[in-house]
Length: 472
Image 1 (cartoon, rainbow, N blue to C red):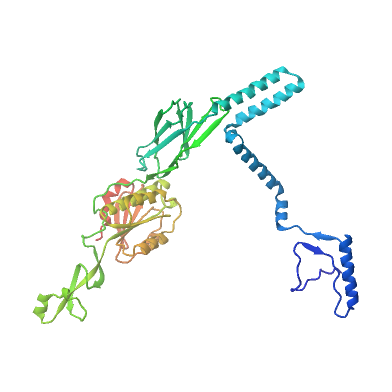
Image 2 (image 1 turned 90 degrees about the horizontal axis):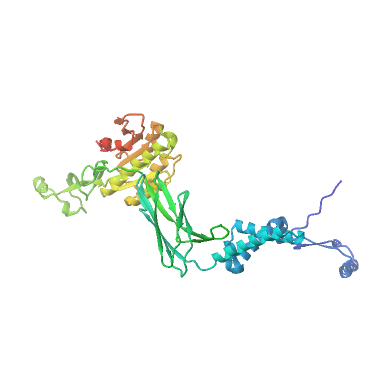
């Protein structure tokens, strides 16, 4: 029967890093002389070296042991990189893979020619080494240049003409050899050749920036590439920072007030009563504490008692827009989703231009009580995918509880019950509209269970059915 190792008591001291083979101390009934003899024997063994002591590796040693190969490889790579950037002022970084290949072949052929006595190999090696040396000497010197990048406009609409302008100036005292400028534009890259530039000369070039779809197009930063014609050396320098160009979604110009936000300039009346507002409601008897400015003196004289005016609270109209960004809910997929986003953008732009407040939620994009450019920037960066419409409506209600018109832009695949649940998050007195983007159906308007359901096939049909947004 195998016995397990004895468990040390909780208060026993634990050595850190050393395990010593010591005899257990005798029990309480043992003689003190025997104990002293044991301690003396142990000291003698340690002094003579006959006693073994096992040293356990520490945490740092174990860590090094587990990844020794990886640590050595990283150390060598870091050392090589440090040497390349330190020796000769970092000029070794200029040599390309082609240059290092020619250099290695030259050294190898030189050794083979010396060992085998072949003059041809020695000549080829000398030619390769001389070529590398000449290209390195050509690349020496301070080639300084200034590169200015201008993108106009930084905000455009889908299909608009956008251009980038690049100006490269040679500010060094030497003539700059023909070079190349690499300019990242979106997911691609523009390669701009630059001719030979004398001292102080400039090279200007303009290039178009395509805007086929909504999104953010990163432009730059430009990088100059200087080197020899063969490609053995290459020097790169990056100028400036990256510029972001916003391609806004399409939006149409709507008539002022056509989006149906206001009945009049004073706002919409609510069922709540107030003692100080614009919409007059009725007269009632004066009560202590009422403002005397609201006393209606003619009616008071006629009835023989003080009567004061009572008002209805008015709510300044606020437009709330929810955009359904799930392509599965649309017959045309992502194309119809972009149409729904364009409809939401058109409503927001018209509302802001009429100096009225508005809030929009488009998946992960949210904008409330802001300017037209910032609203369009938010819609530009909004992503497509599944969305919780009820959660989006609650976000609008949380930021704008005074909403008076709620609009949901969705597709025919969204169930009517889900549309009701989304718009049902708003108050009862809020006018609720569902705009369904469906190219297969005719443009029209219908009233269904307290909702105004507008069907449009394209963005251009929006202005013809905006009458459905006006509260009855």
